[in-house]
Amino acid sequence: MSRKAAVHPTALVDPRATLGEEVEVGPYTVIGPHVKVGSRTRIGAHGVLEGYTSIGEECQIFTGAVIGSIPQDLKYAGEKSELIIGDRNRIREYVTINPGTKGGGGKTVIGSDCLLMAYAHVAHDCLISDHVIIANSAALAGHIVIEEGAVIGGLVGIHQFVRVGTLAIIGGCSKVIQDVPPYSTCAGYPAKVFGLNREGLRRAGVATNAKDRLHRAFRTLFQSGLSMSHALEQVAREDTHGPEVTHLLEFIRQSKRGVCRA
Image 1 (cartoon, rainbow, N blue to C red):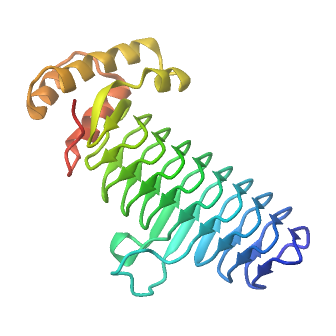
Image 2 (image 1 turned 90 degrees about the vertical axis):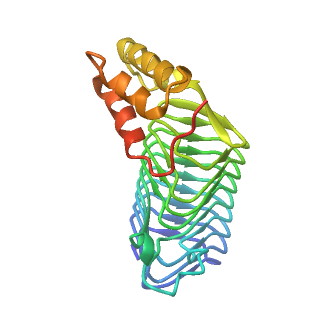
């Protein structure tokens, strides 16, 4: 443990845990022996950090978060598995995050610069990219992939093995049982695509010509009435795509659960 870490006298930190410089640990927090916490990360009161958990630098972990407790999966048999969390994440009150399982690759990964709002849950073997926002009480089942910049609304439930594409946004209280296409606005029970996430694209600084190409692709894929295979063929025949449309088409082609449609 770094001598520069500030640990409240009521916290229980296993001497084998690794705390980086200027880490702050709040009252009554418990940190297990295999936990590693990066420099300048702040952990609030009554938190529990356990398992083989690695947390990056400059994260903020708020009151009551439980990070690294064993997966809520009946197939889990006590095998060693990991939870890896990147830098500058904000993990709000009472968030729960589980490590991986043998059947899912053995690790749960959260990127950097993410915001997990109060009571959100991330289950085993999820892979979450950078700049993702998961709003209050959203629940991610196991084996979910969330691509960069996606926004998950409050009280959303996402089924196992679903993928959520880059810069997609899912409206609150949605039930997501199929893949959510990149750059889309999606909501409902079950969730459906309503169009392009124009505000997300604007905030991400996506160029106007790229947004125009995506708009044309979305009209063909989700509003033309064509089967998805025929719509993909039609969009693929366009003279120019750009990386955004190329990613959109590849995401849909790789889907195993099918994608949400209008």
